[in-house]
Image 1: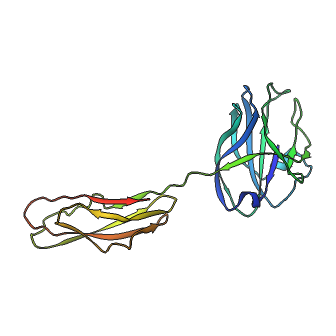
Image 2 (image 1 turned 90 degrees about the vertical axis):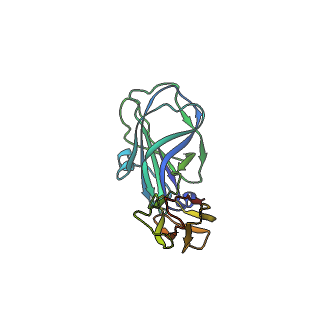
Length: 239
């Protein structure tokens, strides 16, 4: 089965790491499945050989699955970068061998105005031709969950050596977003505990948005008022 999905249906460029089909009839049979994805400028599909259909496509899954129970059924695939410009072909090959095995899994479909689907089926040997269809499988393209990750450096913020009473030392702290989603340092997101020996300076205007691979700095100032070892807690909060 080769199903065509238009850019206007998908939208912008995305990374696809899972595919879902709606199982209308489940099976107990372990099915050998190959899934291919391919960009295309075509807006309909026409008759061809299966070899020509998958030519130039990317194999994103090769394994056995048992589509059950009914409902949306998900398969993890090798990440595929959809370019957001072309249309997308999703090709599924199930090589049972012989005449297959019952019960046969069936997927829910919708009827398209033009031929958006190609089908090929033959017992015992690989099919040599395909037929067109307006019955296109319903599908969900799943993208990875994007998360931000805050990195604080140095951690801990340490003032090594001696600092004399009445003098100050400054340590610059860098906050970096090492994740893949935007994050926001909250309006009260950079604070320090109640010890008067430590203060903050050169803070960014808060709230502050950190995009992936971006960073921002501020200073921690240490000014001891008495002899001894001193410590406090630096708090960073983000969304």
